[in-house]
Image 1 (cartoon, rainbow, N blue to C red):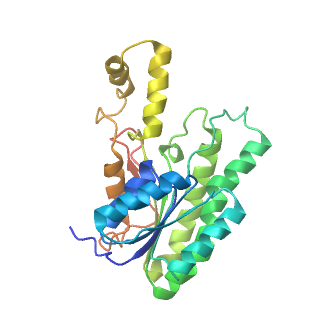
Image 2: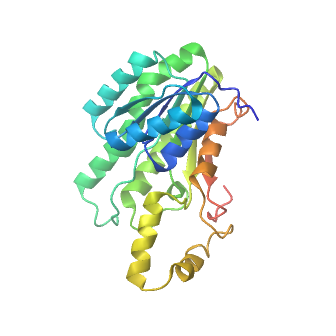
Amino acid sequence: MDFEIKGKRALVCAASKGLGKAVATALAAEGVELFLCSRDKSELSETAAEVEKSVGRQVFYEPGDLSDAASREALIAAVKRVFPTLDVLIHNVGGPKPTTARQTTLSDWEKGFHQLFMSVAHLNEVFLPGMIEQRWGRIVAVTSLSVLEPIPSLAVSNAMRAAVTGMLKTLSDEVAEYNITVNCAAPGVISTARTEERIDTQIKASGGTRDLYMQEYVKNIPAKRLGTPDEFGAVVAFLCSQQASYITGSTICVDGGKRRSGF
């Protein structure tokens, strides 16, 4: 299927690896012009070169820390030098450190607010007016199943990603008439490098074999396996498509059926 977004201009955040890289790759395959950002300059450069090689056109990038306002301003300036306006904005930020609600300090809450919430609000404020003027846009935030079912010991992520979801739902109502859709994509357990590192650590701690550990690990996933980054990237690319123009204000779960809620 042709998603009819060839030539559209996109900013993909946290795009050097994992889910962000998968989204960038999927959009590039649809002919989207890309600007990538990530904290790790070396990994970001490698990813940009890899995508360029696969699609045969330039991929722009700028390293930066989305939790820092000055770094966001530098990123915004870099994007505007290349793309005066954006058509697609993909919000994606790594998760904060694990803590229980009682362990979380005021500093932790504040850092999580800037990392997960203000980064989204800031980029929206800058790039949304151009989408409204051109009467077309796609905003997708990579969130988590925690917005539907809070995950133990991820207090900051649970709270801030839920806040982002509420903010974006509100925004979606306000901009739908301009042919701008605003959605969230909530990954379940996806086989990224970060996931594999966590699994390997837990296997070493348990002293068991990987096969036995994984049988137990996927027991509560109806699909009985981990998802792949490519599967997640394809869903996000579809949400950016012309065919998905009537989907807005939604959280789309990519989780192999793991969530127990039907909503």
